[in-house]
Amino acid sequence: MKVLMVNGSPHKEGCTYTALCEAASELKKQGIDSEIFWIGNKPIGGCIACMKCRESGKCVFDDVVNQCRQKAYEADGFLFGSPVHYASAAGNMTAFMDRLFYSEIATGNKAFYMKPAAAVISARRAGTTATFDQINKYFTIQEMPVVSSRYWNMVHGANAEQVKQDAEGLYTMRVLARNMAYMLKAFEAAKNAGIPLPERETPIFTNFIR
Image 1 (cartoon, one colour):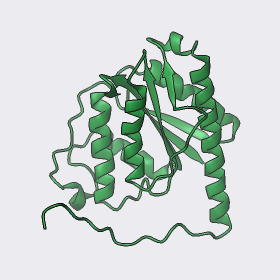
Image 2 (spheres, rainbow, N blue to C red):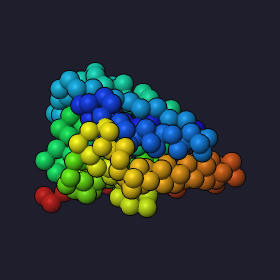
Image 3 (cartoon, rainbow, N blue to C red):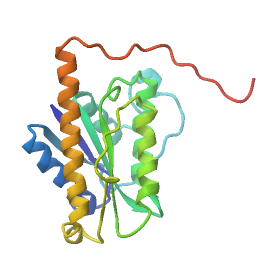
Image 4 (cartoon, helix red, strand yellow):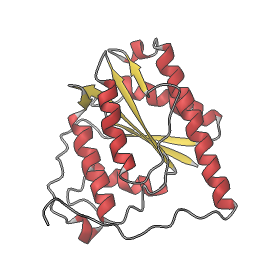
C-alpha cells in the first residue's frame, strides 16, 4: 500500500515538506510506502471551466496536475500539504487542487473515490484552521474518507528547523500517519473479506434556477 503526499509549498524542502516527512517516517514503520510529489514553484493556472477534461480524460493544461493524476490512480491514500498564505492555502496549491479534483469529477472519480485522505497545514502563526477546512472540502465532495489525528493536522514554524522544534505538531503528524495506516489496512481487510464498496447512484445536479 502507498500514500501519495502532495507538497503544495513553493519551497521544496521547507516547513510543509518537513511535516510530510515526519508522517512518511511513521508510515514506513507501519509498513506503508509513501511518495512526496512537489507541485513546484512555477505558476499554475486555475481551472477555466472549459470542460475539455470530459472529452480527453485529463486537464487541457498538461502540467503537474496531470502528472499527479497519473500517480493518484496507483495510490491508496493521500496527504495534501500546504503552507498558509493570507489565512488560506497557497495560490498555486489552490489552483492545483481545483483542477486536479474537478478533472477527476468530470472523468468519473477513478483516482480518489473511497481512498483515505488528510490535509497537512504549515504556518508561522495563524490561518491554519481556515486552510485546514478549505482543503478538507475537496475530500468530502469526492467521497474520500477523511483521516483525523489527535489535533488538527498542523505544524508551526517560520522555517524547517523551527518546525522540527514543534513537538506537538510532529506528534500530530505521527498520530495522523498511524491512523492513516490503520484505515488503509482496514480497507484492505474489508476488500479481502469480500465486503464491497458502497453502492453508487447517478449524481443529481441542481441549481437555484428552475
